[in-house]
Structures are given as structure tokens and as C-alpha cells.
Length: 609
Image (cartoon, rainbow, N blue to C red; front, side, top):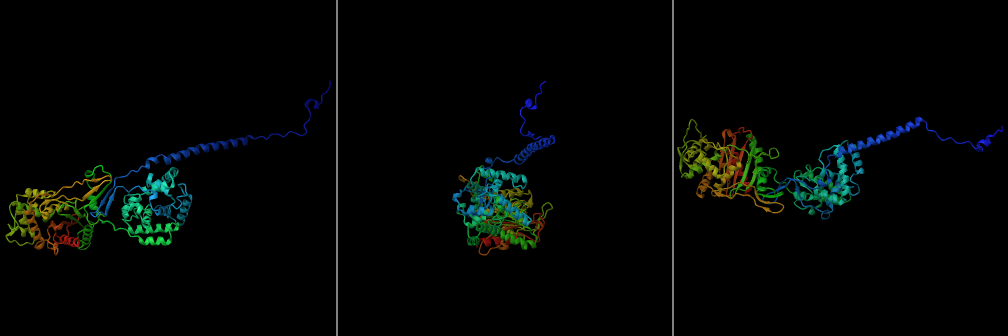
């Protein structure tokens, strides 16, 4: 058999040995597979976690497009009788301003103090955040914020003021949305028109008119600086509530503008020296403001924003507050008098020119002039005397001042020494109790006298017995003052009012006023003025006498000096005063003819200057 060679059987031999392919061990293949699975799992769970976090942070976020539509409470602006601002309530918005219409230093001041990098960042400012974090770390407390104007706008437009991580994330997302939707100038316009600047004012135009009495386009540099300082703390830097703090903050803004090279250091110093804020409205006119707004919804239904010109005289209001405060802090404190109330009414038509409902509105907004019902004591007696006149008597008619007993009740006359028969004029001048009871009986009894008082405008709870002659009814100071007006004006009943003119955004509104109506004859009104003048000239109200003026009035004191009243009148005014304590504890020997009569005189003398 022929042998075949290996070369013949397998072909030519290779010139070099073949290279073997790399082989992956099972262990390495398993590690790579596990790593791949881990990456996939992390991706899946990370995506789910991110989605859950996004859902957590955004599930209740407002729809930005809808939130940009302004929603607010209608505003009410109260002006004093001379047009000066008295108070505002609701949400006060001015005219919508365009950036091009404003002085350049208005947005410049805002950016200088709140966000110098506003024009360059994308809604969030990492540089600013880092700078704020470093400053806060060095100080050991929060001394600087890192929020941009866009973030502040997002917070003010869309979010609540709460501070937590969730709200901050929402703020950042909304800031990015705003930056993607609007230009920088548009964002500034939105901010300047919508930012809250204290005292109910939203936007620079409303704040400029509220604090400085000018539209935003006429702001001066220092005024713009004060407004730019408000977003940080609108209440703390409110120019009306804290003028000194507002001016200090305004100076800081001017310094920031100088540091940003928007103005020179010299200009910043000069503008700071120009700062003079308008005088604050009356500090405690809040009682009056509350009173005139009690029934606005019924008087002006569905009218939206209102501007109301009131009857309040700021000069007279300031006198009332100052004199009442001084009395309560001085002789009143010594006599254990803690509260008081004053009403100044124009006798001819019932316009309320001044009202103090207590010692300090901020401590107690309860209005003791309109809401507190107290016994008026002898201040009620003029209505008994009027009823007697209408039964045919006159000031010279006589009545007994001798002791009297009715069913076991014997009214006393204090230190008065009985004379027998005295004139009605003398009986009122010296406030004789037994004479008052006899006149009530002669005039037809308690119901007849109560009817006379109600006809004059006095609303109260009237006792159906002879004690009514001594003032056991319960009345408010405002009603009592208004019921005296017919004595002063010739017999016309007036309804107290505080709004003289009303305007909505569209038109001047009709003010529902009640015209004075005749309730007693001119003759009886003149006789009452004569007898009330005798009270001041020679009777219990001598402390109310004002040199050079003919005034009249009546004192009133309740049992144990729990209430002390004086209601007096001049040729123009009826002024009512009550002093006492909220818990009805007795004062130390305070009568209507002492501190209240003196307060009447002081107010009338000072307002006449």
C-alpha cells in the first residue's frame, strides 16, 4: 500500500502558528451582566424617584397662565374732608405703568438693592446663591438672600409665603417658566405693577400715590429708593407706620445704587438729605374709619373700588386725640379713669368732624362712641325739660325742689339745699333730681318723655318708670350727641354721617344721606338753648365755660361715678364726652361737671384758634 505524506494530505504547512481568540471567563461575563442590570435598575428606579419627586413638588402648583390674572379684594380709600388720605382697606392698585414711562432710576433702584445680575441670569443666579451662602456662613445666621427678582415675582404671583424646600423648588421652576415666557423688560413691568409694597398697596403707582401723593411716573429719586426698599419687609419699612425706618432703608438703597454705579456717592448723600415724608394721618382715626365702613356693602352694592371723601377734620381729630390722651394720662389716671370717648358733630347737618372711641385704637379698636351703651345720668334731663315745654311750660315756670317719695323710692338731690319752688331754668342749671321727676310726671310720664327723646333721634332702652328722669336709659354717645343737635340748630333732627362724597372707578355715586327734619319748634329750641347756657354760666357745667363764646350743655354722672358725661354746644358744634372704665368700676369723685366739662372747654378753645 502506498503511504500518503502529511503534506499531501493536509496541504501546505503554515508559515507561523495561528493566534488563539481571547476567551471570556464565565465569572467576568457574570460581573458585566450584573453591572448592566444594576445600571438599568438604577436608571429605572432613579427615573421613578425623579418622577415621584417632580410629582411631589408640582402636584399643587398653580397654572402660571391663570395666576397671572390679577385677583384682589375691592379697595376702599378714605379721604379727610380736605382730601388728605385717611386710610385704605382692601387691595389698592394704581394705574398700570409701562417701563418706558417710568424714570430710569425706578427699576434701577429695585435691581440695585434686590438683584444686580437680573439682566444676565436665567431666572436663577448660582453666583448670587454662592455669595449669599458665604455671607450667611460668615455671619452665623441668615443676613443675605439669594433669590432673584424673577424668583420673588414667582413667589408673589403664585405661591404662599411659607418657607420650606418644597416651596423653594416650586419657586425655582416657576422662575424658569417666567424667564422662558417673558423678556426681562416684561418681567420688570409685571413686578413693578404687582409687587406688594405695604398698607394694602400693590404696584409702584398705588404705593407712590399712597405714600407720596404722586403717580409713579413723577417719583423723585429718593422716593423711588424708599419704594425699592419695601419688598424686603413691607410692614417694617412702611413709610406711614414707620417713617424713620423707611428713610433709613431708602438711604441703604441709595448707597446700593452708588455701589452699582447708577448714581454717584455725592448724589446718594444729597438725595438722602432730601427725604421728608408727609405727616402721618391721625393715629387713632381708626374708630371713625371703622364706623363709616360698617354698611358700605348696603350703601354701595357691587361698585368695586371706592374713593370716599369723609367728613373728618384732621386738625380737629388731632386736637381731640391729644386732649383726651393728655387728660387720661394726667388727672384721669389720678382719678382712676382709664377710658374715654369724644364725638364732634356739626350741628347744622350731622356731619361727624372728629371721633375718638377710646384711649388707643391699636390697643382696643372697640368703639366706645358708637357701640358702648351706658346710662347717661342727668345728661338725659334736657329731654324731660323739652317734654315739659311742649306741655305748655316755659323756662320761667316753677317746679318744686322739695324731697319726693314714689312707692318707696326717694331720689336725692346731693348737696342741694331745697328752696321750695324754683324756675325750670334754675332746676336744669343745678340738675335737681326731684324737680326732674316732677317734670316727667307733669309731662305725661316715662313713655311720653321716651317718645320725645326718640323723636329727637335718641335710640336706647328706656325705663318705663319715673327713674327715667334721672337718666337710667342706656344710650350711645353718638346718639346722645345727635339728639342734642336740634337744641343747637333751631329744632332740626339730624342723622350722623361720615361720608360726604363717593366715587367708583367709573362715576360719582349718590351718597344716601338723610336731610334734617323739623322735630321741635324754633321757639322751644331757643328756650332749651337758653336753659342749657345757664348750666354753663351758673350751674353744674361752669368748668365748660369758654371766654368770648356763648356755649351751653349738660352734665351727667351715674351712681358711684361709674360714668361721667358732658354734652355741650357752640354756635357750630355739638361735642359729647364720656369718661369711665370698661368694667364699670367707680372713678374717684369724677362728675360730668369736672373732667368731662374741662375737656369740652379745652377742645373748643383749641379748635377755635
